Amino acid sequence: MTEAPLLRATGLTRRFGGLAAVNGVSLDLNVGEVHAVIGTNGAGKSTLINMLSGELPATSGRIEFAGHEVTRWPQPRRARAGVGRSYQRTTVFAEFSVFENCRLAAQAMQPRAWALWESAARCDASTRAAHEALAATGLEEHAQRPAGALSHGGKRQLEIAMCLATRPCVLLLDEPLAGMGAEESERMLGLLDQLKAGHAVLLVEHDMDAVFRIADRITVMVNGETIASDRPQHIRNNREVQMAYLGDGTQGH
Ligand SMILES: Nc1ncnc2c1ncn2[C@@H]1O[C@H](COP(=O)(O)OP(=O)(O)OP(=O)(O)O)[C@@H](O)[C@H]1O
Image (tube, rainbow, N blue to C red; front, side):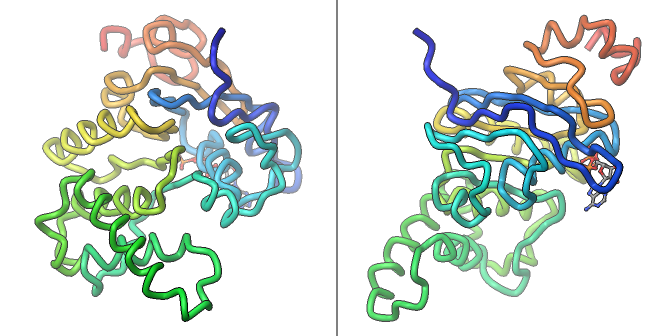
């Protein structure tokens, strides 16, 4: 018997006025897998992530997470339940240390932030989560540096660490390789490869070489709709995908 996916989206649709930015998209996320979503600019990838994270309500469709229907859950509730995300643009606090950025991310997940008498225990838990996240991302040696002093790639790694500090089981990653050089990309790909062991990862990424290297499944979106969702080798050989998106020249990738 196959296990139920950790997260399942069915028929997700989001309209902005007359535009269906995402139209009837269904996908599953499983622990141990990187599920990449690719598509040209404006295909609806970020809108899809925003619906999965809870930042944007779906116009219609259904989202199930860990056996619960979460379609109407707001973003903070989904985040506390284990749906973590990173953003296209860096969101670190430049003047705070790398460690403090992670600790703040962990603290933001704690319920009842106003309950001062619980602060010591909360602080311990957040500190632990921050250290673990820094260890997982290889940023420990930079823990006390101001986040603003990190390289671009280091800041993107820190974003992943901040997401991990919230102890998610789903990672929704919006272009984690954007703006990175070859060496930084390699490091990030190594990190994602490690993380998939304990997480279900959704990866939106424009770097096709990286996607085909790391993805276990690829969903291709065009104008808000899924035109294919399959194992990478089948996506590579899919004529419709080649015509719509990859271009014939990518067949040899
Ligand atoms: N808040 C909004 N209001 C109106 N239209 C929007 C809004 N957000 C996105 N759109 C439109 O929805 C469509 C999908 O946008 P989205 O950002 O999801 O695409 P994308 O695939 O992530 O693109 P990119 O690769 O450039 O990030 C686009 O036509 C965009 O202009």
